[in-house]
Image (cartoon, rainbow, N blue to C red; front, side, top):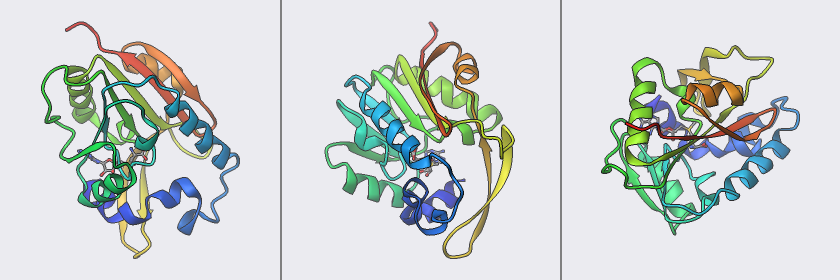
Amino acid sequence: MKQYYDTRAPEYDDWYLGIGRFANRERPGWHDAVTALERAVRALAPARTLDVACGTGFLTRHLRGDVTGLDQSRRMIEIASERVPAATFFRADAIPLPFGDGTFDRVFTGHFYGHLEGSDRESFLAEARRVAPELIVVDSAVRPDHEREEMQERILNDGSAFEVYKRYFDGDELARELGGGTVLHASDWFVMVAARARAR
Ligand SMILES: C[S@@+](CC[C@H](N)C(=O)[O-])C[C@H]1O[C@@H](n2cnc3c(N)ncnc32)[C@H](O)[C@@H]1O
C-alpha cells in the first residue's frame, strides 16, 4: 500500500475530482457527496489536530485549528505542504506515531483505517488514542457493487498494477467498532465517525 500511494500521489485527486481514469466512472451523486463531506470536515470545531495519512491534503485543508499532517509518502507530503501552507507536515509512518502522549486534541484520518488489516488496525487505534482523546475516521460507505471487505486491483496512469485491501463501512457499525462513537456524517459514498478514547 505504501509504494502504491507514493506512485499514485500526482494522480490521487483525480479520484475526488472525477477526472483522468475516473472521468468515465459511473458514480451517481459523487460530486455532491464530496462537497458534503468537505462541508462536514469544515464544520468540525477548531482543535489541535493530527491528520494521519493526510495524502494530498484534499481534506486536511478543511480542518480548522492547529493542524499537523502526517503521511509515509514523500510525494503526498510535497503536494499537501504546498496545498495547506498553514499546516505542519511530517513524512513518517503512522504505526507508531512519532508524537508524545496527548500531543493533540484530535486525530483525524481519511481513507486510511479501511486499508488496515489485523494487528495494524489495533495498533493504529492504540496509537491514535495515545496521542489524542478524540479520533475522527472518514472512510468509504458500504456500496452495492462492493463487498464490505475485498482485495482490489488498482491500475495507475503509467499502467502499473497494485493489490490493495479495502473495507466499506456503515456509520453505526464503524462507531461500534471504534468502541462507541457518533456518526457525524453519512452519505451514499462516505461516512465520518467521531470516537472518544476509552480510559486506559
Ligand atoms: C487513500 S489515501 C488517503 C489520503 C487522504 N487522507 C484522503 O482522505 O484523501 C491513503 C494514504 O495513507 C498513506 N499511508 C499508507 N500507509 C501508511 C502508513 N503506514 N503510515 C503513514 N501513511 C500511510 C498513503 O501514503 C496515502 O497517502
